[in-house]
Length: 587
View 1: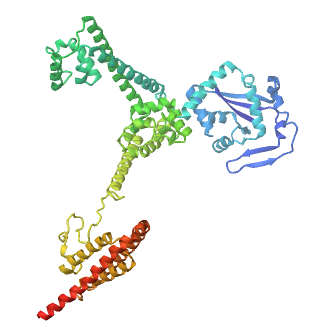
View 2: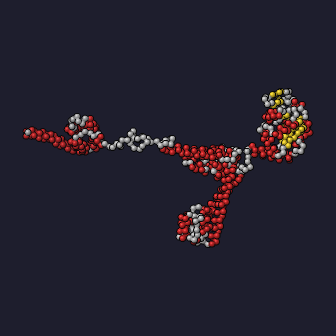
């Protein structure tokens, strides 16, 4: 029986010297291309002691002996052989080695799938069982003693180099994809921006003592530094030509302001130092432009799909924040969405408020184009697509940005769809079409005008009570009398009240016009008049009771006054009767 063992330096084939110990194992698995047959044997105590045989090099040489060794010529061959074994297949070198050294003998292997592949291609019977694995452990422990010429100091570097090569191959790692350069470049770019801003503000404050009006005329820091370097003292502005730096309008404004400037004078030494600071600003701005071009090229090489989605600067900041492109590829879309907003996230969780919707992705162009209400949705969709793009860039084979461009087009279409829905809701329809509600049945469809002319107010259609002018004037007189009488006749007694009510009834009968012309309108008027009279009578009774209680000491005077009024009233009907008799006699 032979034993196949893989080492970083090559393939080793060992001959098992004492096969009697292996013949009494518990289970032997015979690998076949069609089926797996299990043969049970009696259990032996020798299997327990198999590991003790490899406790020393001498005892190990009594169990196994090196028969043949196939050395790898270079690292590429070693990497190919290792990857083939991991994939449970045989390389060309292994097939040649086994054909030359396996002459009808059984082969022990560490992988059952590899044994099946050898059985199919080379027709060699292979064995994979517990005893074979125990033999593998023993050979590994005494490998340097069993293989002559292979020392520990040589085996360790070979193992390390092969493992690194294998990991690069398995992860599709490219030497060009070194994201450390991106992390350092974006960090330096941010530092340069801060330094440029500080230096530019220092130039403005320093030169502002001499020419304060220039800060309002020129807003750009780089143009400001160029103008200060060229002009020097403000008195030279009228003689110089600023056409290469400024437009004609700004140049004319600058020259006018230089003539009437309120700034103080500056010495030549001060101007020299200001110009040197301007040189520093201009040199830093040039270096920043070069660094940005370098960062752009590296991002298009290392992460082209991520660059197509979010841009060079945002993509580089995401990689720097994640530590590396591979670490960022392990993160889900929800984590990428809030990268850069960790402090706000934990503060929101602590205070039980709403969590942030975006972090570094807020500076992406797609999120900036979205309306405020849609920024959360677009950032969530962009984070999901960015996660896919990062994984494709980190572990994929292709170097193009087709996936990122395609996903960007999808996100732009989604953004337009969301904006259309929002416009539709504001117009009154969920489908984006404005819905005109019908104001009138006669309104034309789709037009603002009416088929029929607009209706005008008709005053003749108003309901008016049918009353004659005489009756209305009499009613007003009666109402005025009824309002005046309670004030005059407040101290009257109960008999007087009855007489007053009788008189009011007579006057009502005289004022009412009998006729069927007025119909129900007069009846309604009568009902209202009766209600008013009842209400007034009740008010009179309440007022009389209160006045009688308050004026108990003046009853005698009131009675005399009432008797006089009764005599006057009794005389009035007698005079009326005499007048009527005279008229009859005259007729």
